Length: 334
Image (cartoon, rainbow, N blue to C red):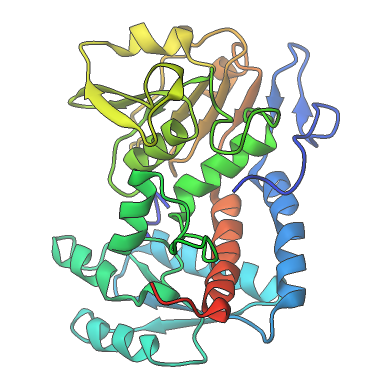
């Protein structure tokens, strides 16, 4: 998982009085990731209590990226704090392939993650596919990616095994569920119908998967990147089974003012979202390691602002480990 990138919620959406956040005079709420992660951890504790043994996550570090090492430390701390085992295995780039294959065959290992980038080339995509499907805690295997884009939510026809979703996009989904953006009155799978969302980032790791997930749940999504804006929807009245993406001639000035939610993930300290374009009362979420919003400016326009999501991403990682264990326990061939 890149250090910069990095299902419905089990609980009903929280009202503003339930969200432990900093409330300023103009009523914008600054919501910290650790508060949202705490709600997810309650669900994880229940799953952990039902597990047959202590889950073991293995992280492979084969680069000298200080941000990746910091992410590994956060992961280790969260695992140890919440009853999960964690091993950081530092290996040379040349030995990483064999180390992954060995972990695939180790019955004591329940989940595997790799701290990317390793080579910074297409070789990294190959390494992503080496992890066994039943241990791919990040949901990066081809089968999982195919299911995500096709809006297929299970691995088997009997719907016994749930597909795994990438951690950071799923973390954003969980944040929006927590904030009440998902309409719980609507059927599962359609709960973003009527919502317009702008995502500023179209990376293959987070931005594009996130736009697909949100559109598959019924939203109208504008995916913004340097080469333009794409529109993701399931068609008029969300009649399509999965989203479609089309190029547009729209600009950020066209789409941001009508967006109920704006999500940013630009990995640059120089980028700042033009907050004057925000719809009054919009919800703003930043998943970049950089601050894409000027905090003072965004809190004059937004109703809710989530400045970072790292702790939620790690909580989702733990949730995915339990899901992998549940899938293996059901023992369905896929």
